[in-house]
Image (tube, rainbow, N blue to C red):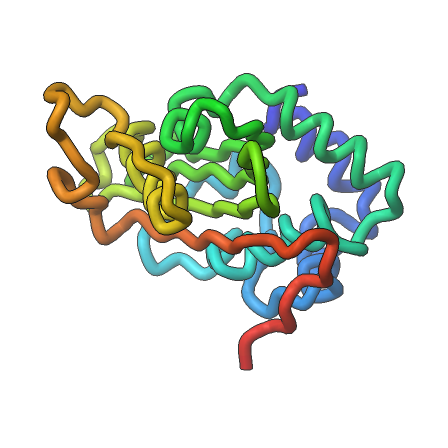
Amino acid sequence: MRALSASRTVLPLCERGPAGLTRYYRSLGDPIGRLDRYEPELNDWKPGEKRDTVKPAFMARNLQRLSLGDALVPEDRQRLNDWLRASITGAERIRAGVPRDWVVGDKTGGGVGAYAPGSDIAVAWPPSGAPVIIAIYTNRNDPTATMDNSVIAKAATLPARALGYSIRPPGAREQGDTIDSWRVPSTACGESRRALGQERAPRRAG
């Protein structure tokens, strides 16, 4: 189901639409996330807009609680993770930035209007160790610009390298290219958290 159809069909069933989703954010301990409008109106966005926004750090914690923690009953948590792993829209985003042997479940997002907003949130399972939660949100300063998947993919290499994995940036042309050979734009905001088994998500920031 496309995002436009889903928002119009499902949200009215979720405790009175956008306001209900905002209340659910609060129940997860997220003091920032909010939904004010339906699709396609929420795509009318510009930098500094407060409506229909989230903070990457809190969205990472939300995803941790939902995909690994106790926010959902086990059956629903498994169903959510199955949906995330089956997603096919993020091949050029977080999935392109982490090592190939990581199992990734993700949910992409992106506006169709000005400033080219784009995002991807994911839970990633390395071959060993605990899962990693990644949340990356980007936009461009130019209202006529187009969304660039490679910015998200390059940002996704950062947590992998921080955990000791040696990988080259997506799109690196020379064998010697490293993480230091490019910069992630300041408008790319991200948060990653190393999940500790099935522990509860950290409490919200003070």
